[in-house]
Length: 369
Ligand SMILES: [Zn+2]
Ligand SMILES: [Zn+2]
Image (tube, rainbow, N blue to C red; front, side, top):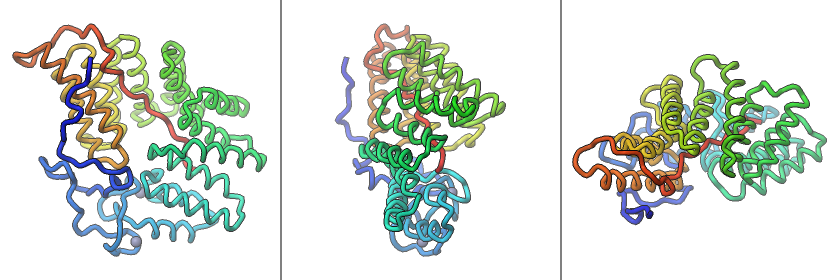
């Protein structure tokens, strides 16, 4: 069964990952204009100039949303020997993303190499993580090298586990997460967030290999640790719920999957705000849309996948994810037209789901340095 409409133009030109890193305005783009307009009056939050390329590398919004890469770099140099400024916003505390994060990490690494400082492995890890975040294929080799460097500096603790975690995501090797978990177990740190995240990533690796029972087991263990740490609403708990939803979907337990995804989405709305546009929220809409499609609820499925596509188009570094979501949306539309041509109504469950692959499980990047 094919996926139709792949060649249709959707109004927004294809852009390179670099070019897709365009600023997001504090105000949402006007309805009917898929491209956010060039932000008017935007200025760098550090130098206050509006000249040159401005980026929005973190969760800061409003007057603080925009900044120059070189201004961030100047600030990071000024607070040395603190190194987290190269990788994380000091105000909103989110890890930098997109092309800006890569540029900053490159400068951090170049500077560390020039000074032969002991931050070389940390800088290499920052670069690998930033590349990974952009879906850049150089990530695995960079992280591999960071791992060797960290070990050559005699490190064998949580810092190494953090590189192993990111390397596992980049390379898809299940063994990396197990190595990371061994380090956490050895140091009595299995009940920490970082260990829970490595476990979730291990679950993802197992899920990709079709080992759904084992994957579910890892997700459940991670969820129990995260829930103990955050009994209320929390972004990581929401991710874990989403991953459990995906594995349920793979197992054909669509009602269970839909329930997990709805819980994840509600939790994200409580954490990020009702109208927040983040890749986590987009992911929940995608996964929920797919599970609803599998159950045969095509009308509702279409709505969630449309929301997902809209969100991904307004986020940086999502080109591939947009294409993937569009393929799923088209598949749901094809089925809807076939199964319920008259009015929007619930159709019988689809007999074959091969052309509508279950949603995506979310990787967990290690925290800042
Ligand atoms: Zn500036
Ligand atoms: Zn920020």
